[in-house]
Image (cartoon, rainbow, N blue to C red; front, top):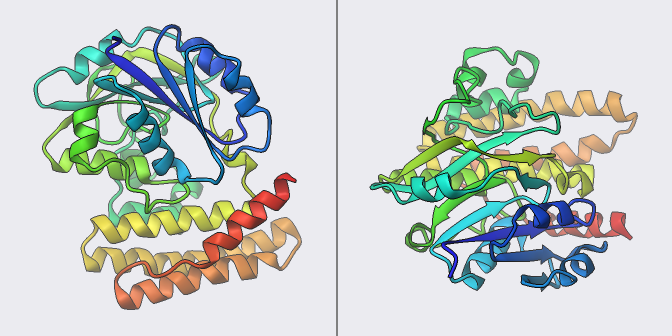
Length: 320
C-alpha cells in the first residue's frame, strides 16, 4: 500500500484536471466533484485507478475534502488543487510529516514560468489588524506595508526550508491522524475560503509543526474554479468566511474591530464597483454583507446566512 494518497476537489475543472491527474503518477487519487456542469466527471471516469465521488450538490471545499480523506486508506494525505501539477516527487514531504511533532507539510508553488508564487505559497496567520487592512483595501493599494509583508511572507526566502504557519490547501500534505484529531476540515466555511487557514491554525494550536519543503514543487495556475463563480457570490462567500474565521479565532474586541472594518470597507467597495461595473447592483451585494457585519458587531458572532442559498442558485443559472 502507498504511504500517500491524493485528494482533488473539482468544480467545473475539465480544462485542467487531466494535467493534474497525469502529474500524480502512480499515487492513489480520489477526485471529489462538487456538482460540475462541464465534462469534469466524464474525464475522470476514463482514468483507471482514480476514484471519483460525484456529488449531486456542492458540498463545499471542506466537505469534499473530508469525503476524499475518508475514502482513502493511506496514512498521509496530499491535498492538491485541480489546477496544480506536481513537478517533483513528494518523498521529502512524506519525510517531513514523519518528523517528531510535525503534522503537516507543504511544498513550493510556482507559476507557468517556474517563478515562486510569492504571497500565496506561504502566509502567516491573519490577525485582527491583518484582516482590517484586507477589508479596507490597504493591503491591495499599499502592498509593501509592514502588515501585508508579514502576512503574505514577503519578508521570507521561499527557497529556504523551515517551519510555516499557513500554507494553502492547494498543495498541502497532512497525517490522517491529524485530520482525525481535528475532526476534519470545518464545513462551516461553506462553500470555500479560510477552511485551510482554520485547519492549519487548529493544528498549530495542538502544538503540531508545519514544515515547508521548497524542493518539492507544484505548478499552479490559480483561481481556476473561483473564476466560475458569479461575481456577487464570490464577494459574499469571501466576506462570510472571513467573518467566520475572525469569530472563531479572535477575542471579542478583535472580532468587533474586523466587523466594523467590513462595514466601512463595504462603503468604499460599493462606490468603486458602481463606477467599475456601471451598475447599481453593488449596492445590494455590499448592503447584504454590511448588514451581516452589523449584526455580528452587536452579537459577537456570525448569524444565519439564508442569502447564501441565493448565491448558489445564481451561480448555477450562470452556468446553464
